[in-house]
Image 1 (tube, rainbow, N blue to C red):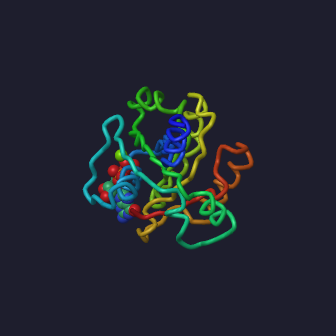
Image 2: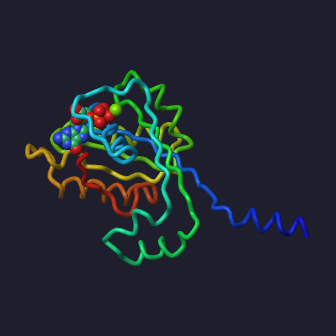
Length: 190
Ligand SMILES: Nc1nc2c(ncn2[C@@H]2O[C@H](COP(=O)(O)OP(=O)(O)O)[C@@H](O)[C@H]2O)c(=O)[nH]1
Ligand SMILES: [Mg+2]
């Protein structure tokens, strides 16, 4: 009887799932600001370069974000199954410069998600995206779902159109099977 009660108590406690998400992309494209905005709801105008790696954490209840529009069938099904699912998203925010390659390489293998960020005002940051995918592949990032984030969308001096970003990401979805997520580009401003 005691064992049954104990088992009952255990099953009513919400389970917390931990997800490891990394950031990739050139220096100063806005990776840290995106993560800071999501985790702490803050924006820092001054550029503070990431030294090696920064960390951010966001506890979430699955369904919290999906509860906002657009409400489609996929989001509705997430909500339906979300009654007691807690998430803890651990962000490993990686520095972009080449000299931190060795630090980054420690994080690719176990990552489950990735924000691959380019800055819409920097053509070079967009053109470097394939090199970031190469680096991740080279270091066994085999189980990672990648979201491409087109950052600084508030800045009017665009050098990469929205269509170009979407076309590139869509072509990569075809080329990389499940590695890139179904909704390939998130347009963002921190
Ligand atoms: N206008 C604008 N500036 C941004 C945005 N996100 C980041 N920045 C600026 O871009 C610079 C680099 O951002 P940061 O997140 O540190 O880049 P990281 O090196 O990729 O981590 C900082 O000066 C930020 O204030 C954005 O959405 N809009
Ligand atoms: Mg940074």
